[in-house]
Length: 199
Image (tube, rainbow, N blue to C red; front, side, top):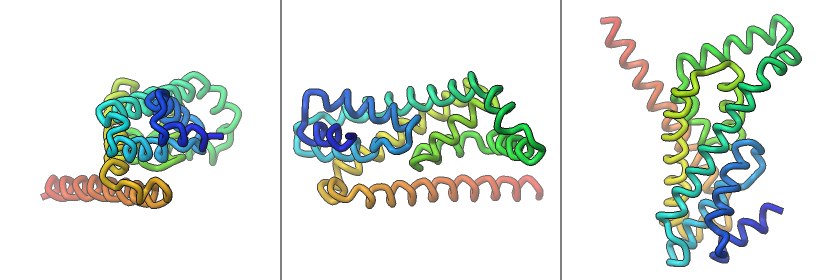
């Protein structure tokens, strides 16, 4: 089903920008939606001049941002019910407390890195709402993450060309590599700052 939408993007349909937006939005809620593939495909098509890269990036970023915020709001709105139903045991409460601590300590980097990991973005955004991570902080980190993700995917298609159009898994591997590199860089910076503070 979603393959048809990606095909419409590759055909440079008049609906291409709307399709990129909708798939990026849905992917934040339903991880099986091929948003990266559609944005990479749109980048490939933009490289041939049939789409505008200057419209592909904002369409993908806006869809990702609104999808992430929808997932956050779902977590926040239904979090109490979910907590009562699924996190009532002692072990479950400890896990929830752990998730809340992680978001408080590393919220920005979790939100940013998760944007590059299919499925990870859904878990982190729902969890952020569930543990009531401050929305203003969430919005700032998520806006940056959505823009970086849209730029990465669109430029990957634009410059990578046809190599990733037929083998989206290569783009996914690159995305995971970038996500892990960003996380490692942030952790290294945090470690160096803590080490400096101890001296």
